[in-house]
Image (cartoon, rainbow, N blue to C red):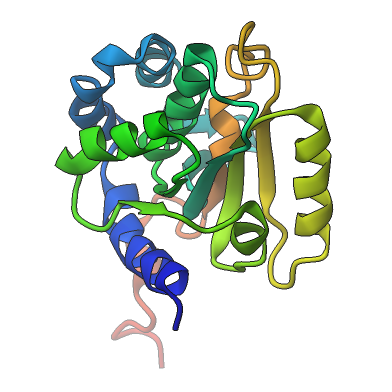
Length: 224
């Protein structure tokens, strides 16, 4: 088993417990750490204020429908050598904090000094949730344990990564890519945090017993 495999397995184990926490609890833990990253801090506030954990959906009489969301799993936060400016580092951190706040674990690619500094600052999160890897972009793309890839880099390398992912086995992975980090076009979009999540619909039939508890009885003394 490679070091990357060991890290992803550890992250998967930690992610389950982390995902079971409320978004409010995750944001509360991450917010003090994110204060040095302006975009990440803004995104955490957005997640806390605008991402309801449960949304009651309209439905027919006798049926209750609730929309729930949670993290995808393990997210690879990666970049290329063009992402070497302070703005790019801010975008990289924003990817990591958003992934964590929405219930995921992260593997940070050691693609810059800023990435290593970010890993150190995230040492306060629960054990196993954050790892840093020296793996190449290609090695990360070939690992089927990743549910999503949060990339900061050039449009050309975004295309390369997308092609690598199209050839990967296993489940389809989400590519979340910021190529215009000076303007944060993707990361300030309304749907950006939702890209790190999966949705589940819970449907409950509320008419099964018609509100009459006696109907729950399978057989009574007079049923002969």
